[in-house]
Image (tube, rainbow, N blue to C red; front, side, top):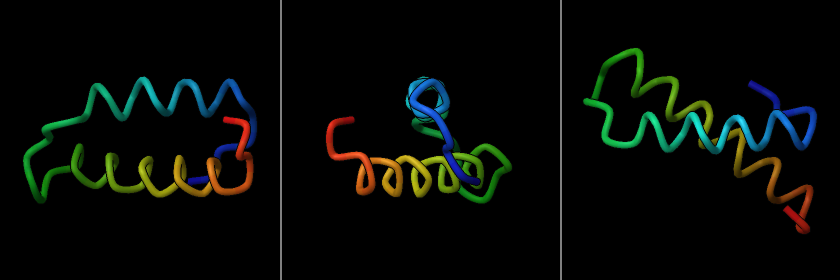
Length: 49
């Protein structure tokens, strides 16, 4: 997953919050991991975020 815009970044943050506490080894857990990685990548390349 790649976050391309600031709007995507904001939406990803909302979704990460929704998925917080997902049970391990579920589709939601996998989505949370992918989104978290994408958010971190965005934040590293956009320090003003």
